[in-house]
Image (cartoon, rainbow, N blue to C red; front, side, top):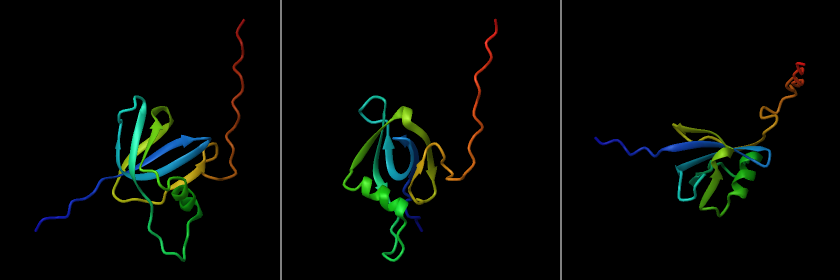
Length: 113
């Protein structure tokens, strides 16, 4: 008995306007535009109408009608091939966990005379 063909799913994380985007797609490539990652076939979770995730809904609205997106390579944070799609997110890039812990500020190095 043949097993059904499994479609590859990618999780792509990139930075856009100080936000960390996490999107899921079925297809990605370097594409024709030099220096850009081409992402297409976006995957958004099919949820019931009773439960709506506002974060994913915002992401879904932003990419509504987009067939293909080109992301500058220097904005890519990470690309993973995953078993199944998850929930797409838009998070604050400076504080991705959303917690109240702030990194300790780095001081200037002393100048040697």
